[in-house]
Length: 288
Image (spheres, one colour):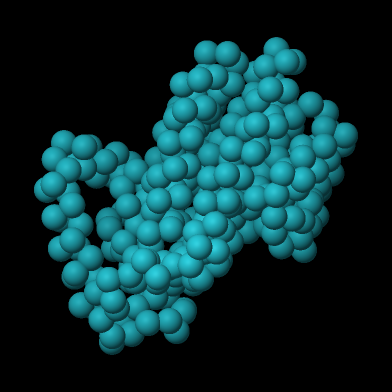
């Protein structure tokens, strides 16, 4: 994948910054978008003339439109949209409506709003476009400790599936990135939080099996998957095995996840057994 124009949301750090860097290294041009405008600018400055930055909340239609306009006015027609920004807002049953709104807006509806803008452009131009969704293994399995994250990531996977089924034979390629543990602030903040039981959600990821990968490794695997136009990109291949077990015997899988959750709660490093609505790693941490 080279000589293309891309927008990468949540590009100020983590997976998003690594994807922006990998795209530029492969000969593409990128607009880096992040809620933290300074972080986005720092990434763009590091990447040089092939990158530009924009600060803003990609849950906002206007920010998405501004990112696409910046890409097209600077580099030419947009070829790739990377819907990578995410949040861990919320926790369990006591999550407020505001937390649910944030999770759904950032983790799902931002993807819908982006696709609503860019897919018709690609169809009208008659040139191929590529839509990459960063979801999570939680979107295929679940996220112990966080209803908001689990539900919104399931919805992100579902929307990517629908997008591919509906437009995949009309020149729009779609991939859905579903990593497990990645060395980002979103994961690591779970171990630093002083909220009761906050480390359980992060421990559920890091102790599930497989290495915690570096964002650069995930970015490399993602570009390989996009080159092959593979729908499901799984940097942790064991996720597919877990997903197969889930679909083969749902009740058995649920029972196993209950036992796993109970084990994590008993070994919580804060010394307190968290309640049944274990907090997210952070109340409203945006990820890249």
